[in-house]
Image 1 (cartoon, rainbow, N blue to C red):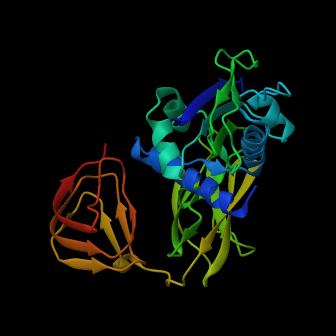
Image 2 (cartoon, one colour; image 1 turned 135 degrees about the vertical axis):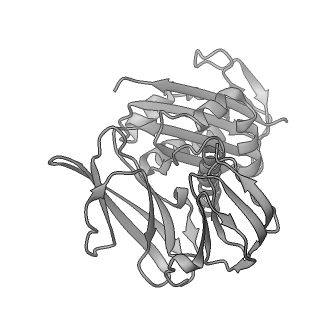
Length: 327
């Protein structure tokens, strides 16, 4: 049976441990696609949206249907999100069945205009993902083709693998570390701080440490995690007058790369790089807003490469005689 896709979206006024790994991979792939498509802001993974998405994938797998609406309880995606405690201002959903891996399902969604629009929407700040594998799936899957929440067929499948993406904005201003990647090998990370239209100033801290000084708000920020391997938590505060909002995010630091000064980074901001250089896995390429040209050979060994849209790096990690201007 061929894989299946469905989507739904709305803008309102202002069962296994390994499955969780697949869900996280989908989150990371979503944020990669958003970066490649014009440097869109990353989505923050939200526990309530995860709960809503996982429950729907579970229900589809266990009760033999494929639809945004639960064909037994008549519950809509938006009912599910609210029941999970997520009070959305904007919300949407993609579902799929039959795709084998996160890369496969993301390829399917990105090649469908409606699903792609949900993934790349500027209306959302948060995401939840649910993936469930049903080993006993059979050719008895019900589906709704006209949106009336009633089964129009009952002979599809087996699909085995069921996927749900829930998207939303709730009025919160999330903090996102390294585009919501699960782990990093470097303590030097990129922060994205939502706050456009509200925040005048921002500040940060690691775990329960001292806050940094207040500084003018900007959504993008480079930050150094606390020393040593393990789960690291960063907090951000944004404020407008006396109105202060706080957000946190965490990431796993998998090895203790030491904090680095500018000599360990390659900055390419309206400059020319004319000296051969080799960088380790703990080094970072920081591509700025200006054009750049690499006239020498710059080799990276599995580095973090932070490029604005319009730039790319060869699979072997080598730049040579490259020039570019960000889109």
